[in-house]
Image (cartoon, rainbow, N blue to C red):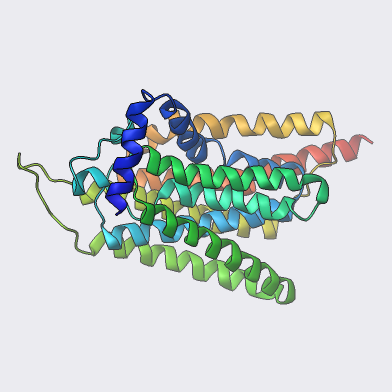
Length: 319
């Protein structure tokens, strides 16, 4: 039934001459490239706790998505059934294993976390609705483009809800037991290294197509796993550093402060395109992607907040 659903969407795409395909590709691209800038900006400029809640849920999803994906090792729909023809350039951008949908577990906690936070204010509830719609649209776009089955996105949505719920419970626990946070950060770091060991040494299916080519190269899939687990590692290290040594507070609302935070987002847009390849060339695909993810998360959680703290201190000294 899942393949039949994708074939029905495929027939619909053909009937409208792929008119919606560019938009669906943009939705998928935005979810994994630019959406993270929203909670980062919120963390820097508006509400530190709300931004931290969203990013904690996101990094939690980033831990479990590759572990599930590289355990289940479910092939993409067009590998399972040659009648499925992915739209646009999706077949080149959506490689490897299919279950669960990584785009959905990225958009889910990032947009969903902000939706939960903004819902508390009646004036911003319309933003929450738009963010939830974007999550659902991202999930649907993966079906529409023919790169994921309904099961892939459904489980990804479930993982999103669980991560948001678990993060809320974690924050409530730490409000009552703040002294436990360092222990939890250490436990999370150890868990990430255990995850690295697991995906590195577990066995993978080694199936070949009619031309004798390996259908999915486990080494390439491990690249993404190292990168995703590195995101959580960077977050944990940065959270420890920010909590103990930086302790920044968002600058007061204003055009100059908002502009400063917007400028701080610019490196996050370009780091992936020029700095990650440098690290991959220097350290290899596995460790290069892991190191980049650590530094990328550290920039968002600790490094630029340090800049904000120094700016605030300099202004206070001049006052």
